[in-house]
Every structure is written in C-alpha cells, then in structure tokens.
Amino acid sequence: MKENFSNKNCCSATGSAVVVKHTGSHYLLSRLPEWNPFIAVVRGKLRLKGSTSTNPIAVGDVVDYQEDSTGSFTITGIHDRKNCIVRKSQNLSRQNHVIAANIDRVFLTVTLRDPEVKLQFVDRFLVTCEAYGVPVTILLNKADLYRGEEGSESLADEDLAQMAAGFVQIYSQAGYDVLETSVTTGYNIGRLKDMCRDKVVLFSGQSGVGKSSLVNALDPSLNLKTAEISQAHLQGRHTTTFYQMHPLSCGGFVVDTPGIRGFGLVDFKKEELSNYFPEMLRVEDNCRFVPCTHTHEPGCAVKAAVEAGEISPLRYSSYLAMLEDDGKYREGDE
Image 1 (tube, rainbow, N blue to C red):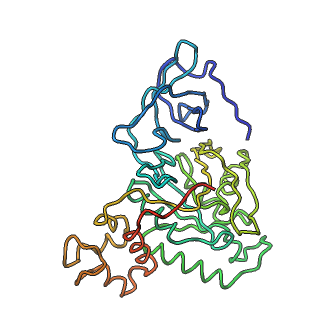
Image 2 (image 1 turned 45 degrees about the vertical axis):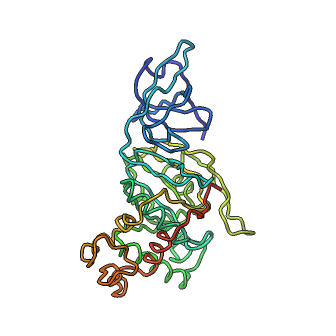
C-alpha cells in the first residue's frame, strides 16, 4: 500500500489527533475520522503519569500537537486512554510495551495448524484484554483446512475438525465469541466485515496465522504484505514491521500488528488473577473462603466447577501456570 502524507495544509497549528503509525523515529497522526496523515515528532521525554511503558505513545492514542517555528509538528500531550493492550517488555524488566490504545475490539487470530495454536498464549492474551477493558473476539482462521468448504483445495480433515470443535467449546464455555474464518473460501469474511464497520479494531496473534490476509480480505485495496509459512520450522514469517492503523473502505479503521511468539503478562496480584477468567468470576462468590486462590482451599467453587466440567481443565491449568509464573516467560516479536 502506497502511503501518501504531507504536512502541508493538513491541519491547524494546534489541535488533537490520533496516532496511526509509529516507526520509532516519528509518528503519523490523523484527525479521525478524517484520513489525512501527517508527520509529528516528540522532543524530549514525554511520559504518562505513573507509566512504566517503554513506549509512552502508542498507535490509537489521542495526542495534542502544535506547530513549531520550523513548520514541523510536535506532540505535546497524551489524552487519557479508554483501554489498551499491554504486554511485558522483552528484557523481562518491570517495564511493559503498549501494543495499541483506544481499541473498540481486538480480533485474536489463531490457527490449529501451521502454526499450531498455543492455549497458554491465548489465555494470557485474553487475561490482558479482561484486565485492560478491551472487548475481544477469537478468530479461528484457516477453517478451510478442516471444513472442506466448496472452492477449497483441501479436503475435510476429521481430526482437525474435532480439534476445532474442542477449541470452540473451551472458549465459548468460558464466555468468548469464537468466529471460524477462511480467506481461501471467504467463510465468515462478510460477518467479520460487519463486526469491523465504523470501529477501530486490532488484529493480533502469532506470525503465520493470517492476520494480514484477513485484513486484505476485508479491504483488498490495502494490499498488506503476506508471506508463506516456513516449512522448516512451521512458523509464520514476519511481514508486518510496525504497528500501523489503516482506514477500511467499509468504514472504520484496523490496526495491523507484527506477529507475536509469546505474551508476557504485566504484573498482576495473585489474588486478582481469577477475576480475569470470566468463567471463574461467575462462580467464585460461592467459595467458602474469601479471598480464595482456587488451588488448595476446601469448599472452592471454582475447583468444583472444574470437576463438574463447567470450567475447562485446560483453562484451569493455564490459570495455575500464571499463578506460578516466575517472570521467565519469554516473548517477543518475530
């Protein structure tokens, strides 16, 4: 996609705009819903109050700007965020990295194969969405691999179909919407487009799950770069370099993100972690002890729900792993 932006006659000398791209050296801003990106920089250090983020300004942030004596635009302040997606920095310090801010919905994209879905990655991402107030839908992409839809080159794969049904059961039972999609056959692409219309949405997930292909299916004019899966390692090849927002022809805006190998949680108190598992939150008021860690306490309603099949044992195992997390869960962009 060819970028067109200019600082000439693009905006007033002062005002507010949304960050639509951050390259490390400069930012692109636009006064949404108008799409007319212009360049702005930050001079000196600009920090959010109480923030430990490595990037105090993220795509989606609403910022104030002003024109300086050279005719360039400088970011002078950041508005309060309604939400954000945050993960632990790669250096395992206490700092975090903000993926994007002020998002109406995140589409966490996964695949059963090439690459294989990692449930702990999914659960960590979902916990973060719950903690920071970001609505999330799970996209189970490449459904043509097991659905055998008309027009697909692949026959129906019964084993994969059973895996898909199990995955959908786990997360639907937890309270999440799971939408199966396929760019190859167009399965549910129309429905996905309706969900994106007139909203600011973000597609995230591991490299190779088809995020950019899905965005291209929503709006072919964007022509985002895509790449084939590496057969040597069965991992996606990195295609998106920067976090960047794009306008959708159907209305609204989409943030495309680099693929993520893992998702390091920002520090949570152990006693509050279960609040970010919706299925646990629904029953934990019935625990005999408050607070309850849902590990060893007698009369624990969460453990009883796991034994009764009302909470997935796999989700409960993810919860226990997060409780025991010693900070060595490495993650980073591919």
